[in-house]
Length: 224
Image (cartoon, rainbow, N blue to C red; front, side, top):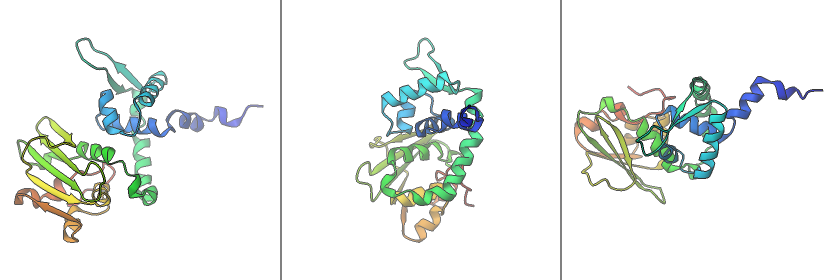
């Protein structure tokens, strides 16, 4: 007699995407990662060997394609139509996680590198002035990687854990958990400042529009 799980579509799907690394890779690709180095930046805790193995398996399962154009230094990875159709599933998981699972995440378990990568990808650059804007972020309670910089310009946003040698336009300082709550949409940056949990120093045009340009999870509702 057949094991009923072997022909269950839901079970088969969970075998393909149930691995935490696969979910994180798909999510990173959805947020704009393209190269192997992008993925290691987006998922700092994954080893290169595990990442290579997962990408190979995902390509075999038809979730991603690998392109190695001539004249380029490194290959790029893209979601296939099958992979793209996972977007609403990932989004629903994220919404569920924000509602039910986030409360069980300890701040000591937060991967700062992954958190900051997500934030630099979700910085709302359309609300920033034209030209270049340099944002300095200090994480008060971080043991390592306490200082970060986001350099936004017309070409995108660069993330640096070392001083990029540019004068910052605005300085933010807060705890890891507080910054994460703002990104999740659990509170506004303005509320954090009012409560003394975040300090902001910069020109008035950036300070007064803080909640409009702060990074925000795609699953969160923006504050007015």
